[in-house]
Image (cartoon, rainbow, N blue to C red; front, side, top):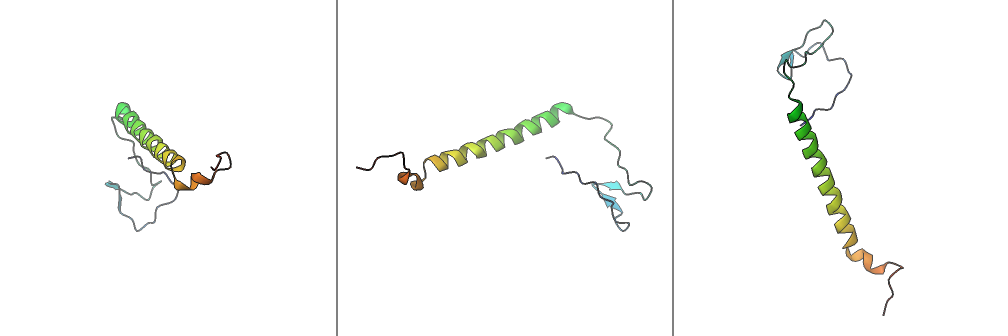
Length: 77
């Protein structure tokens, strides 16, 4: 899963973060030597599918909810 990035200074009391030593000089992290773009793309696509599935479920629930029985477009008999 992708971590949210925040541009904040790390407290001086933190010695390690995400398995790496935090240095006082710049507090910079190095990118991994090998970046697996295909893996990143698969993770992004999976997140998008999950979001789309959630939207479809919400729409289905909204359409088929009992509250919709009283819509003005429907004629009561």
